[in-house]
Image (tube, helix red, strand yellow):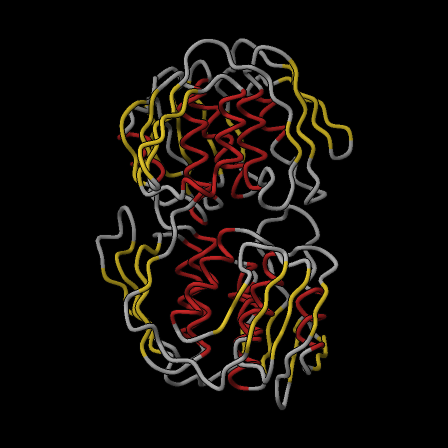
Length: 432
C-alpha cells in the first residue's frame, strides 16, 4: 500500500504531456476481440486498468505485448486475437474494473456466447447494465443472470432499432461493438455522445466497420460479415479528464501550465468555465494550450451532465477549486447518486462544504490546511492531490491505488511542474 505526500505552496509552471485516454483505450483494446489477427494500438496510458484489461484478454487466449518506456505512455500494445479460447470474464478480474463488462458485445458477436461477472469499479453509485442487455436483446441475444454472472447466447445477431432510456456510455459502446457484425442496420437512439465513443467508432471503422453519427445522439451501424485488424497502428486520443485536472492545478496554484497531447476540441465546455472563474487560456493548436491564473478565483456553479455538458468525472476536482474561490458556489451531481464521498475528506483539509442530497454548497475559504486524508475513488484521489498543492503544510493521501487506475505517472508529472510531492509506503514517516 502506498500514499502520496504533498507539501503545499508551490506555483506550478512548465509543460506537461497528456497521456492517452483511459476511457477510450479500454473499449478499443476490448474491441480487438471482434476479429482474429494481430492488432496494434499506440498512445495507450500506463495504468492499472490497462493492465487489468490485458490480463482479462490474456485469460481469454489473446496474448499481448507491450513496448515502450512505461513512462509518459505505453508506446504500443500488440494483441493477438486469433484464438479466443475462453468466453468468460471472471469475477476476480471484473471486480477490479467496471469496463470489463464491455467484452459482452464482442464475445456475443464473434462467438455467440459470453459469461461475464457483474462489474465492479469505483463505489460511486448504482451503475446497472440493464441498458446494455436491453440493446443486445433487441438484436437477438438471450440472457440469464445467476451466481453473480451474466450469461448470454445468440445464434445470429440481427440489426434493430434500439431506444436507450439514458445516454449510457458503456451501453452505447457494448451495443455498437456487437452491431458492427450484425445482419442489417442497427440504429441506437439516445446514444451517448462522449468523445471516447467517437474514438471507438473511428477504431472500428479502421477495421472495416460501417458507422455513422458518432458524436450525436443517433448512431447508425450497418453490419458487415467480418472485420480485419487495422492496417496501421491506431493511436488513442488524449485524455480530456487528465488534461482538465492539470488545467485546474494551474488555476489553484496561480501558475501557468502548457499542456500537449490535449483533445482541445473536446474540452471547450470546461475551457469556458475556467475562463468564467478567472483563468486565462491560450490556444496553440488542436492539441496544445496554456492555462494560467492570477488573483482571486471567481465562484462558478456547475451541474454535471452527459457530454457535451460538465463531466461528472470533473466534479470532485472542480469542487476543490471552488473550495478556495472568493465566494459561494454549488455543485449539483446529476449522474451518480453517491459521488460526494470526497466531501468529508476535503473538510479535513479545511474546506467549507455542505451537502443536501445531490447538491453541494461550497463557501470558499482563504486557506486550506494539510492533513491525512483517504481517497474514496479515482477522481476523488485527484481532488485531494489538488487540495494538497495549495494547503498550508503537508497533506498525506492514502489509498492511492484508486489514482493508479486513471492518472499515468502523476507524481513525476507534478514534480516536473515544480510541485513538492512524492510517493511512499503507507507505513513510512515522511517530512517534505
